[in-house]
Length: 267
Ligand SMILES: C[S@@+](CC[C@H](N)C(=O)[O-])C[C@H]1O[C@@H](n2cnc3c(N)ncnc32)[C@H](O)[C@@H]1O
Image (cartoon, rainbow, N blue to C red; front, side):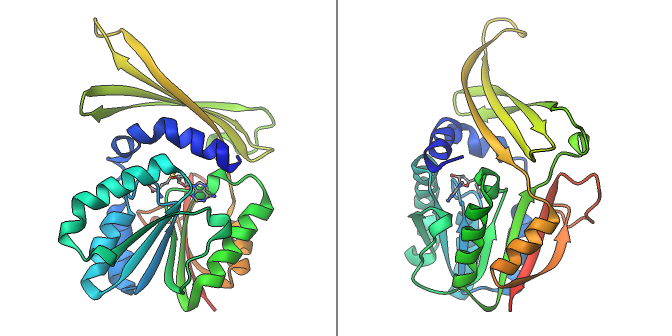
């Protein structure tokens, strides 16, 4: 997906993003990592609404650390600024720097001790050249011994090895200030191309219990990585991939895993 497509997609879903992810419960993982490593400088690539970058900045401020959150979506960054304004009275103003940047051409002007990619910003990068540019850029910013943590989605297990497209549908609900909406997600996964055509549809209940009206819909093409590619990308960043887990709960990676959390260190 090109930058304009990514921006358009997030402009549509931004109002629902935080409530949809409210139950994800991944914050303890990121907070535990920074608590253990106490980075002075952190970059959160594809920080979105600041869902993770804001609490991280609050925590890192305790030891004088600073976080840069970068994203290319104005709609997501607008929300990140709003969340930071709400929390900022409790932390130094310099604890979080939100920047509109494309992670493929990251330029921070200083080295970092920790680079994070949370909840798979890489899914939007279709070409190997874009992935390579992102990881090379991360590597140029990481100081020796610095850490790289990447959360990426893997090909859904139910689609692995299938020569035909597999359609996966899920439903959830999200509470907004003006009521609850129903969210339908449809993924048409093409295992051979390691990609999926993903559509989110948002519905608001009206009248009787079973009736609802469509509010909006948004679509993007998701790209799936595998551990071997991630290992090669970590090498491009000058990092050794050290640990891999089945996502942010640090469970062992298996054939059934749909996410991978990789951690590595800059050599
Ligand atoms: C799935 S969201 C994750 C947001 C955030 N990390 C979180 O966990 O809530 C992916 C984010 O990556 C951003 N993104 C996608 N491609 C990007 C790029 N090339 N440069 C910077 N941000 C990008 C999107 O705008 C979006 O905010």
